[in-house]
Image (cartoon, rainbow, N blue to C red):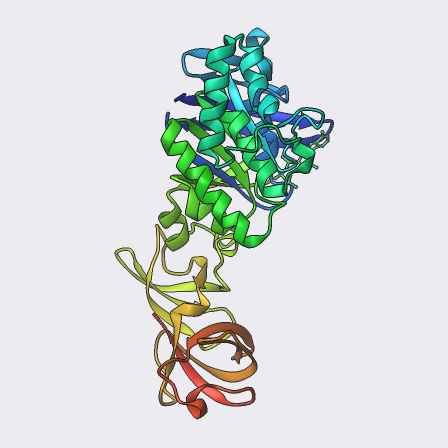
Length: 356
Ligand code: ATP
């Protein structure tokens, strides 16, 4: 397990600054995910940490070793950092079979033949590929190839493993299974893991900690549940799957609880937990579609909104509704198990909803 300390990490490509003075500490044994949309700088961060990219400036310490210090012209390349890497494209040696792919980093580390064979067998068992050692990697499915890549990355017992969107080429069921395997191998081999994805579900289910990036800076850093429940901006809320983000103004504050009015409408929401805000501040109200529930009678009050159902999508056990309330599109998800057919809101009907 390796601790990583990053300070002032900057990467420029010509006039474009892909990373702006990143500061970051990753505790040893942590599973950390860098999350964000395409172009936010997560791959560049990973590649700088792995030694595949030379930072423009900054310092990176892995364990007790300085691997980058631009002020002192220190740069340790990837093959000298004792790290493991898993890529979206698998990056296996196509002319080698499964065993030889997994054995490759062990040969480079000059591990004796018998020990090497034992280690390869252990890794084949760990990723569920025992019996396939002699198979050319080109004769494996995508999921099996990624298992070989995982086994190869872990074979030399690196203190840290870097994953760059490793599940993106797999179908959704396999993605889930492989994700679980990545996490259980992290626990079993007690590595530190840094994982890049743009998939919030993957980030939430695998990570101890999620770092959300935007335009080369960290915008939020916390546990999956803190980001899921308490995004600190509309950008993070959007990325964490909040379907409703409404610009508003703070009308009252009591401690950390605020009342807010949505801009240009009569919609009022109370009991909103906020950070430091004052009356008159602009802020966004974000809530998930599943956190709005149907109110039986047309009623008004805080946290309630009435509108016309514009669209209904059947999900099996629930419906997604697009409701136009005071000119605003609101997304609502209603469980239908307890409702009779005519109680389920239909397109064209007016209904009232309350946000929990
Ligand atoms: P993706 O998920 O699409 O890989 P990302 O969040 O990983 O996106 P990066 O690949 O880190 O983003 O890219 C960050 C920025 O740096 C982008 O604007 C990208 O176009 C730019 N960039 C990355 N690599 C290079 C390069 N080799 N030369 C020039 N610009 C680059």
